[in-house]
Each structure stands twice: as C-alpha cells, then as structure tokens.
Length: 242
Length: 231
Image (cartoon, rainbow over all chains, first blue to last red; front, side, top):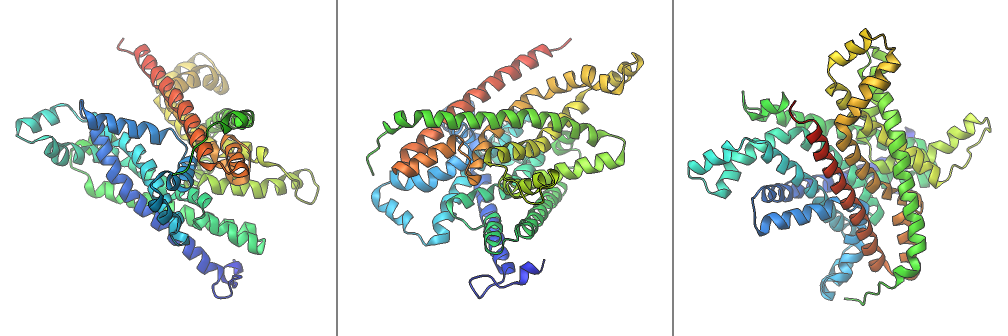
C-alpha cells in the first residue's frame, strides 16, 4: 500500500490525492443523480397509476424508452448526439464547457433519467400494492388527486418499497463508473490511471475495490437506518415485510 | 443542426450483425453459466454447513457491491496471470477480449442469479423436501427432480428480466475494446465520423430487442400466474 503515498507524475499530488478526487466525483455524481432520479421517479411513478390521460401515457413512454436502452448507449447519446441535435448555439455552449463539467453534466442527466425510469416502476408497484380503499377513503375525506398522492398514497408506498430503493441506491454508485467512458475521472478511471502510470495494477484496483465495498456498506446501513426510523407500528410498512 | 444520413447503416449492417452476434453470445453464456453457478451458490448459501454458506454469501455480497466495469478490468488483468499459473508457464498468457467478457459475465451474473434462485428455493414448501426424503430420493435427486423444477418455475419471470438486464449490460465490454453491437457501431462511427447516426441506430436496435423481450416476459408471467390460479 506504499503506492498510495508516492508522488504522482503531476509532481504535486500523491496517488492518495488522486483517489480522493476520484471518490469525490463518484460520490457527487451518485448523490446528485439520486436526488434528481428520486424526484423524476416519484412523479413518473405516480403519473403511471393515474387511470387515463396525457400524463399516464407520457410517463409510460418515458419509462419504456429509458429502461430498454443500455446505460452506456444512453451515456453516448447524451454526450455525443444531443449536443448536435439541439439548436446550434446551445450545442456550442455545451461543447465548450471546461473538462470535468463537460462529462459531469451529461453523465448526471443520463444517470438521473435512467435511474428515474427504474424508480418510477417501483413507485408504481408500491402505490398499486396499497388497498384501493386508501384512495377511496381519501376522496371521501375531500382530498383532491394531488393531496391524495402527497399525504395518503406516497408516504405508504415509499415505506413498502424501501428494500428495492435500497438496491437502487447502491446501484447508482456502481453505475457512476459508466461515466468513465465519456471522460469523467471517477474512482474506476482513477484506478486505471494509477495502474497505467505505475504498472501496479493489483494494488490500484485492490484499493478501489475496497472503497466500493465501503460505499455499498454505508449506503446499505443508511437505508436500513431510514427504514427503521420511518417504520410505523402496525402500519403498512410492517405488513410489507411479512 | 447537421445533416443526418442513415444510408451508412446499409454498408455497416454486416459488421453490426457480427457485433450483435457477440452480444447475444455473451448474453447466452452469461445466462447459462450464471444459472449454473448461481444455483450452486444458492444451495451453498442455504446449506447448514457454515463454511459453505459464509463463503457463498461473501462472494455474492462482494460481486453485487462492485461495478461491472471494475470486475471486467479485474478479469482482464488477472485471467492471463491465472492461466499462466495453471499452465505452469511462469508468465501471463493473453486471454483475449471475448474470453474475458465470457468469464466476467459468468462470474458476475452468478451472484445475481444466486439471489433469485435462492428466493425460488425458499418459495418451495418444506413438505416437498420431506416428501422427497420419504420417497428415498438422494439429496442430488431431490434437488434435480423435485425442488429445482418448482423453484425455477416460481422465479422464471425474474430470471428472464435479469437476463434482459444482462443483455443490456453486455454493452459494457466496450471498455475492454470487444466488438459487440455497441463496439462495432462505435468503431464505424469513429472511422466514418458518423457518431450521431450510428449511436441513434444502436439505441434503437437495443430498444426494439429489449422491449420485445420484456413484453414476452410479461406475457409469460400472466400465463404462469394463470396456471397457478386458485385450486
């Protein structure tokens, strides 16, 4: 592990600094994509449970497209294709962003929409798992559609799907590694760079593997903590586990 | 906005088809190998032998915590050393991108299939084990003839959905420069400077195949649910 404290070819940083930087990009991409994906997924998932209408169709269209194209292909579409298809001035603005951001923003958009589509399916499943009496009772109490979702359906649905959300939360950090294909130097790309500079592949990949294991463990513990904090005594969260 | 010319696809078609063939090969190898080793892992995880169950659960947990790209890099780096060591050559023997892809996907998918098969095994009632025991079946016979057919049937839609994900994930072999569907498209895109047309086309091909497959799985799911309707 002495490798970590050797000076990198840039002459200023150690490889440890490189890894910290890579970890920083992995975490910031993962977290910001998660927040966006959760927002998109909740809206699209709720829209899919509406009986009819424009929004249900739009949400279904979105989910089908983004779930059925590989993440890497979507990355390339956002990075190479979209800047060419938008109006020229905007395209030029996108392409002239300084280095990390030119990869970071397409990757963020891509990962959010990809994960959002997967979350939408889970949110929908959670809402559909609720007894129909819930929305009927809510209507009887005078809630409108928005209020029914906001105060009655979604709070219960989320408690039911926390286990699958945990899975997605862990997956999003793994999926950030796909951003290396469009030039973001996140963790895996850092390992590659260190190994190319030192030929000590085993150590470089070993350290990064340990970091990913730690991220997964922390992500899992965090979600378990949230699940426990939100549990309702005898509520629908308890039933879901049975 | 630049001018799009999709006629390039006609010339590219044979090369893309060859790439698609590798994509499907990886999917098939990953599926078969993944189910086989995944089943062994699932049995090991449910075993009463603490050593087996701990080893299997560590393997599954570690694999599921790592990005597929990182596992691809590991195999790409380690497989030549292991092969050299096994053959006693004393130096690494090149393994090639295709073999690397096959090995990686079997190792990686085994962990994911293991969890699905385990859920299937647990869905089979304990009475089935006792009954097989009472009929004098050996442990192997019990699993092969009694437990697995029921377990797999119970989780078949989830297994197939995972296989669609595997089909999509196979595009990641791009990072080790294998020429799968995406790899082939990307090589032509860069050679002829036709990135836009090629990536849109490849996106469409993946979409049509995945969408059709997931529709078939949904259909199968409702058929299976029908077969299991109330007694």
